[in-house]
Image (cartoon, rainbow, N blue to C red; front, side, top):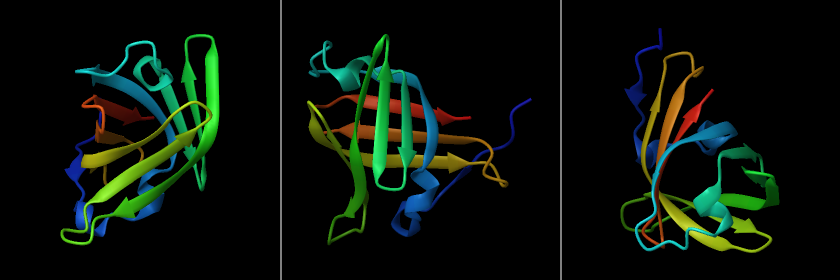
Length: 119
């Protein structure tokens, strides 16, 4: 049985809450190119400063960082991969009390929406 998840205040989100191995649980492409690496991604491995994106029989690596807008302090995840560079607004992060389970919701510049889960 999965644990109860609690919403994290995004204005106070520590960057380390985003690290770890994430599985893509759901995605809505909207106007995103379905052939792009991010549109086909199945897993993300976010370690301090580095990211590995895994899709069926493909992998791309690069780096990532969290940026915040000046007005509301909303967190944006910036991804710099070999073939792609993009930003995604962190729209929701939910975690269990012990941090063993998490859900991360991202809204990309292209309009793609993605839900990631841990473990």
